Length: 120
Image (cartoon, rainbow, N blue to C red; front, side):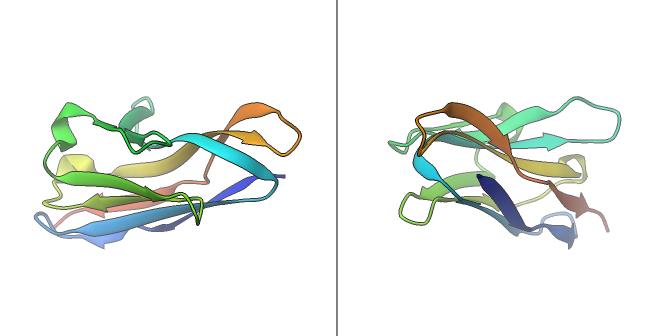
């Protein structure tokens, strides 16, 4: 069984920084892409940033230059460094991974979500 466990998040003032991490564990063979999504109240879940197994990254336009996604393949962990946070970044942030388990089955997994609140 595969699990994604997130940590980080919390309350920060506008202009502040937070760091999220997400560790995958279980019967993992290979993790392809790892991503961070966010979901604000009343809105759909949307992609914030993604990173491939080779390290290629992509970002939603509003976070470019402020957020940085990275991963440690040896630790099966993805990180999201969030700088210059704005009130509109307030949301629940979810880790997502597409991976192949040790039985050869490829599927998507989600973390439980972590709250990020940007407010003065």
